[in-house]
Length: 239
Image (tube, rainbow, N blue to C red; front, side, top):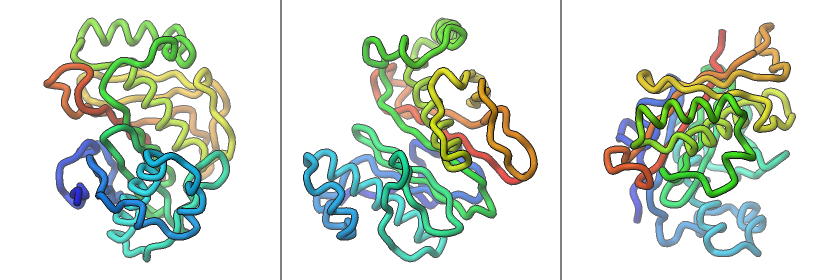
């Protein structure tokens, strides 16, 4: 059985998460992973291919493991509007999966207002994706960063950051956020990122959010682009 990473054990999200969160990560699926699904969950993916059913089950195993660390009893985690996971009352969280990785982060809503997490393979984006999801100023940022740190797939990190911003945005707004409605920038030295909104942001605790802040990391960067994974975390914290 694959080991669940969390509770102080180093993983892809190590050092990226705000205080008050619990995390669980998997880098390989247990053989019997689909047996961990609740009947309501299993029904949703009954007609899916095996790969889809396994990743669906594995990321929910991560979520329930993280929730248990908050003292939350196991329950189905069903997708709601636009596929966003339905968390128990008083809980916020985010799930992500890609080849070779599944992860979930949860927190009590008193500790974290909203959180978005995304993991991607550490390698260049497929041809044509960069042009469809990035603004001209972001492509200029990529060129600058790539000249400085060619060992990192900055285009993949940019895509991941946009995904994390959306995952933090949606629970606060219930609305779609287009790739063109947020500009991402990175601090290569501090491992931080900023997503500046080009549309009116949500109002949280009486203040309008104009930008989302977070952190990024790469697992396997010492082996060069195309190895390991990249991850981004975006969190909205209480004032």
